[in-house]
Length: 352
Ligand SMILES: [Zn+2]
Image 1 (tube, rainbow, N blue to C red):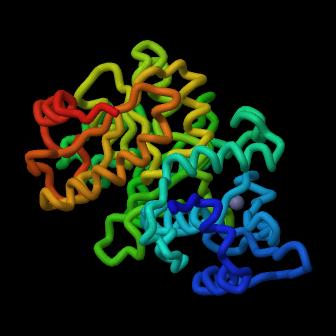
Image 2: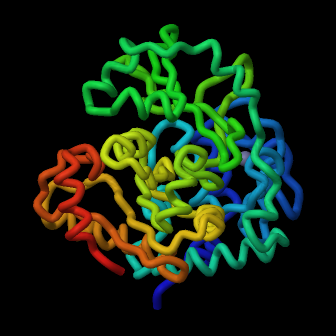
């Protein structure tokens, strides 16, 4: 018998949830018969207010501030790792919870059902019904500079100065990091991430701070590149979904119509789907990193990527890029090689 995510989640004890979170130094602030209140750890690394509720009956969390959405422990873990600069998959999160994942779990199908269930519970029907993300005054970016020397690692990788300008990338000499602002579809600044360049930096990517405010944002509710690329997407009805910001910039270096969007990980949410539908997207090409070095690993990853693609197939014509010739370096994006090679991968893409 295959299990759904919901069944897996409903087997988890309240004690286990507390144990998992305490490994991140997140301790309950209040516990009643029906719920446990934690400091928010879903959108901020520290200093969260006690607004993250865990409901014992549904085994679901709800963040009442920034995220303003419902999620389970698995998706909370994805968010928490993301805040620490590490991307994990849903499968990884299930493993972290020590669940018996040896059984056949149909992730994609149960995820789609889960979205429906959670949207019903939270009383919202579409992502439009969610409150707007927090907006920051874009003048906070003025303290960073446009510094060709700071951008050097990216320029050496072939990212063009035009793209760096288009996406408003800056540099912070104090923290030695490339500053990556993210805007919503209307051009409001919703967060800022840094690519930390020091070899001993705790994370390669992490949200930046402004005073005592962490400029993070719920990545499940936005794409990187929306403000800059929405016109091209409206024109082409196609998006290329990539994992990181750099790949969005690289795509723009290859093609005049930049239709790449980054999910900053491999998570596809109901909000992502709602945004794509609003942009009248018909085709989605998943262009994930080559997290494989052998043919065997490639086949395993393909199974994993197909599960993610399954979330999209009810709405879009979906395909996946796989580097069958194993020419990409380990963990490189399909856009890290030449334009010709990217086009070869497009030609060979796996159609769902
Ligand atoms: Zn939150």
